[in-house]
Image 1 (cartoon, rainbow, N blue to C red):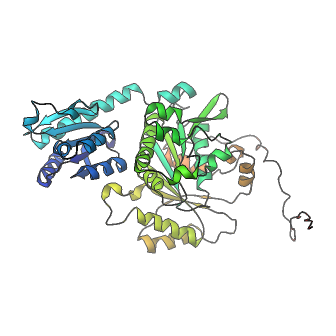
Image 2 (cartoon, rainbow, N blue to C red; image 1 turned 120 degrees about the vertical axis):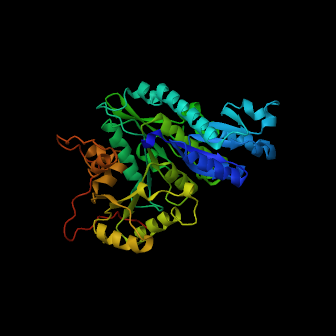
Length: 441
């Protein structure tokens, strides 16, 4: 059975023996994978924020214990198919939660675990088929006119660019990868900036609004569409992006609800666009954790120095701790790193980086590519130009061919476009920059 046929399920059951029986029942039903279990509503809400599930099996006994929190959990399900297990005596009185739009069905006990799980899987697959028929990329197709220039379709891809610190070139790589995917027509690609201040918006000369605050205040498809900005690629094509929160004040007062909605925003983006690029903050913030867990691949960006390597190792360990619950971990197979040789005299190459990572991690993520030092990149950024558009960062082509199997970047032809204005003279032996005269008094 293909992985795309698997239904990802969260099981909630207050009684551990019943929970164990349900999990054993799930093992006997083909096409289901239990990705999390929740004995109470608090853990269920944590799972819903951290785990991508298509179906949720709810115990109605939890509704009796805390009706408001149970209703909040139902609101948080999104597009997941929910089946509620209820006692037989509740069939006659029809509880209030039975009318919630996210409740697809109610199973009254006693019913065998196998029958219960089979019903959940049946409803989840029916919902999946309905969404496929609606074509979740319709929003972008109306505006840009196609999914892939070559007619080829890849599985939904979400790339998270992170470094756990500032300076290695994370945002530069995320922005130019987003541009390259749209430029080559691989798939509709959306860029979501989670960093404040938003360097990507500055480089692209985007206005401060709309931004992510729109979705945090008005979650849902309409709020998502209203949060988008568009960048002109030329030739009548546009590429979408979601700018970060405009102020540090909003970032500093993020609530748990805001954090949950950032996760919902990413999932909404994954339903609407073939590729989603996530640019994370330069810390191990809550947005970084959410982005890494919601991604299909995580690109770790580092420079060839001891400090960056140590920071990357510490970040990996934070999401791969033995005591961490399985649903909160970031699988190792998602990770890969890019070595950015900035400055030109960087002292650690790929072999030295791996030699330092292995003792700390007992393993090492694979090297995706090495970025050569290019002083033109900063010049283009200062002129609000995209370096990839001007012949810089050819290594991004390797990333595209790695992430999108079968895609080959066309050979670039013709002269390179002019570099940004105010290009400094080439440095010669003994050259020193001229400094302005400063008058005192």
